View (cartoon, rainbow over the protein chains, first blue to last red):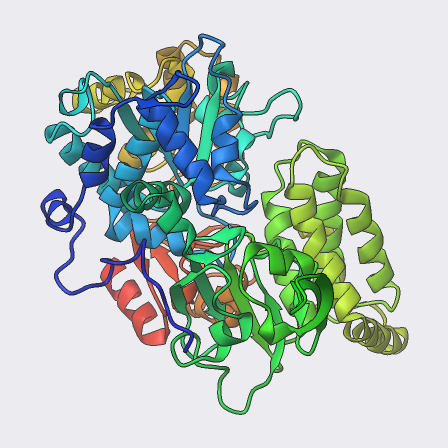
Amino acid sequence: MPQEFRLILKNVDQAGYTSDMECYLRHGGYEALKKVLALAPKDLPDGKKMSPQEQVREDVKASGLRGRGGAGFSCGLKWSLVDRRSGKPIYLICNADESEPGTFKDRQIMHKDPHQLIEGMILSCWANDVKLAYLYIRGEMPEGARILNRALKEARAKGFLGKNILGSGYDLEIHVHRGAGAYICGEETGLIESLEGKRPYPRIKPPYFPAVLGLYQCPTIVNNVETLCHVKHIVNMGSAEYAKLGTPNNTGTRIVSLSGDVKRPGYFEIEVGKVTLGELINHDNFGQGLRDGRKLKAVIPGGSSAKVLKAGEVFKLNRKGADGQMAKVDVPLLDLPYDFDSLQQAGTMSGSSAVIVMDDSRDIVDCLANVSEFYAHESCGQCTPCREGSLWMSKALHRMTHGEGRKADADYLVKIASNIQGRTICAFGEACAWPVLSFVSKFRDEFEAKGAADEARTKVAGQSPEIKAAASTHR
Amino acid sequence: MTFTVPTPLEAEIDELITHYPQKRSASLMLLHALQEHFGWISKEAMEWTAAKLGLQPINVYELVTFYPMFRQEPLGKTHIKVCRTLSCALAGSADVRKHFCDKLGLDAHAHVPQTTPDGKFTVEFVECLASCGTAPVVLVNETLHEKVGTAQAAEIIAQGR
């Protein structure tokens, strides 16, 4: 039976579990930190020694941990790219700018179990010789910032943070830094600019790979909240045990944020790839299905930037057959295992693991108009295709949802989106183009029917004054 | 008008600046602290911040105009931010916003934040507040309200009166 597997959220929501230090310590808190500080250098077969820090970095690599923020990049590999020879300080930033529409998992960790995140951060900083780290939390979470500041103060008082941590000679300071409502700060180089006190304009790569030229032009690691929490569990369990969770190349657990048209929306931690998209939506242990009398229409599987999937779609996935050979196998939408690779093969992504469900009562043009308005509002304005294109798409969709669609709008939207993706400094270009490209290609009939009906009607009645006004003033 | 920052606030700000190896990094935190105290960010507040951090006023002005949370005019004492984005929209956030606007005599179609003439309320449509599982959500000043219906909306208004 598909069920939750709570590793990160083990204590969260349990009766009597609180966010303070004493409670965390009663539940085995900061034991992973004590464990690594007691590690001795390891002798290697070639006579060299491997430092305790290096051992933890190798462990994280061996665990197969992939970033939980959106891109799913190997955490161990990210750490291994850090320039350790430059002589410059290395910084670590926890990306807690949770703003991808549909996502609300990091909020649970920060509000309900802040010390788990802080311990994960201290471990990651220690393993990477970081002396100064920042926790960049989005501005709309003032309560979260207060909770984290209190937890940091408690950690300093206990000697887990600050000068000479637990007598080990290791110094580390972590500060909370608040954003101020800009989605683009979730993009790591935009976040770094923001932390430098500037507008969060993403930097161009190359040369500005954070691992080499990050915060203050120094090597910098940027990891998501959930990713950093996993580091604690890898240290506790050992990489081999950890890698047994989940599926090959998709190890560990993941917190899925489920919202939209299901009976029981919420956050569910699963072993990656052990639960299907259909089970997340329909099973009693998860979403408990759609509202009575409703049928599935579409699913956004990884936050609003991910390409939409249509009910009834069947995908060709690479699977190992009984003979051990890889072969293409037909997998229907609801049978897609919820993991990084399967969703990628289905032409979309697990992104920030936010599943948004839409039922057959929904107007698909309305849904896309909503998503596109978000991106039009959040484009930072640095690259012309994105700054202009995101607005053009949003304006066209606004027109379509206000009775002034045209049959040619479907092609118009695709044309604009195609001219944004791949032509911008950061991945925001794709993030605003992909929803449009996927919605229009998969529901083209609905876009064209709406446009044609509006055209037929306005030919008789003429354009309404409201739409003329809206078209001139709409952002 | 002279702009003065009370001593305890300035002490708090001086402490914040020590968090960063480069002073400019403290910009956002300073603006948050000033906005929390004064309710908004005036031209004088921006000039004060720039001087404090050794920057030109434009360096601060460009932040205030970019980041949506900073505001250049005083807003209502009760600031109601209704989430507009998809999951909340599916759960009826447009109706929630309209309800607030109707009850407070504001224009439910305007795209900008709107404040009641008595200065008690501001209603604003904002982007995803990251609590999509309990949609529709409303952030009132610093408190998040979940699964907001008309009854809860009435309570929020009653508390702000």
